[in-house]
Image (cartoon, rainbow, N blue to C red):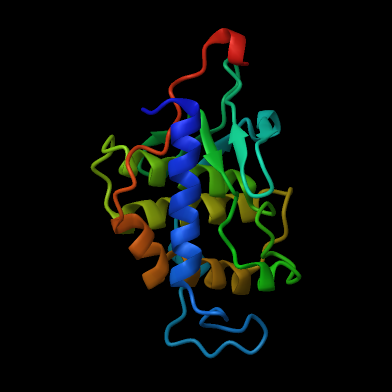
Length: 195
């Protein structure tokens, strides 16, 4: 783990690098997409999201928030396999969706916030060398969390948006970000005075 300022600096550098690698226009158009493949939302099992109503984010800058878990009721995702993921303190931009798509319903960076937090946590654990999960396992955990969230009565069930998000987190740009080694992007655990 890095100190708070260093972790944020690394996270911002990783994000800047990802944005620089992406073309001026994203590789697909949300309304007229021509898919090389289609992923079926039903092919991902349901898990269980807990404490989505106790998510606490602190604004850091125009791009990032700091997720501070509720000590008594932290966000938790239980996968269909029984694996439990409980994100710790981290910096997040929600879904790293290109701004040109934010107008499209379902593609804002926060519409599926809990699923994005689960994904960011696992991505950061990888960059901190704290996880043996593969890119594909982390991708599939995100999609399972998204499938679970879409079946809850809190967000709209949108299979086409599900496919677009899958394409984004399975893209060469996402894999490129995964393969980088920016150093640990997680801040040291918060002490009581930080909360």
